[in-house]
Length: 145
Image (cartoon, rainbow, N blue to C red; front, top):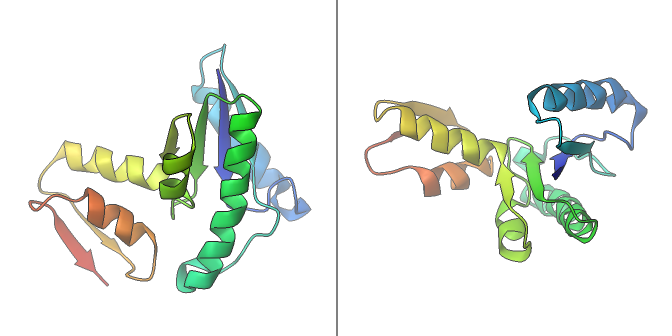
């Protein structure tokens, strides 16, 4: 199995992210089965403060979506959005034939299965809000700050 792990950092494009990327690869390999490969990469142009500007989110999405297409064309079996904003997750689910998972969406779903008494605080500017809002049931408490 081959998994594409998409970071929203500049890993593989900006040398300042090399140590981060190698550490992330090591962490991924620690939990993989021996017959599974992981390819960790970033995006060509990392956008800072992306959670504060919708236009920057679109720009970041385009970069991630382009890599989604590459991953599928290169025969990857799954695609992981390794960014808490779940960059391009909805778009990817609508266009890819391979499974795609976002780390925030997966975390929210897991938290909601653990207890009805859980709550979370998220910034209303962050795209994660729409993911959490769509995932949260009426029993869950959402706190906006």
